[in-house]
Image (cartoon, rainbow, N blue to C red; front, side):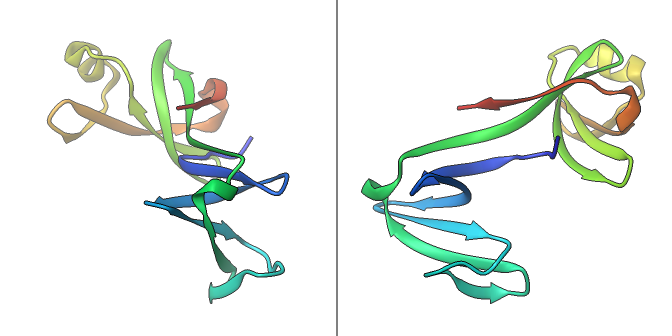
Length: 122
């Protein structure tokens, strides 16, 4: 399962990374597609009217690591960048998490130790 974090939109039966902007939505794909303009190597964009979008959701990847809830922010090789989704600073300290910001705790977790990878949509 790949890690997703951000807006995703359905358009013409496919799902794309998306960036909503008022009445328009920018759709992104990593491969050339009809009507998409290459804006960087491996990055193509098409702007469509918001009323053409079949669905628009914010997608996050969640998991359990060391018996605690985490959001997965990214991945690199066999590691996942995770952010503690609980509210207990003592738990974060006990787990040895890095303080990223006030009340925000992160770490690199070995993918093999992570359980229950799942997507949640908002």
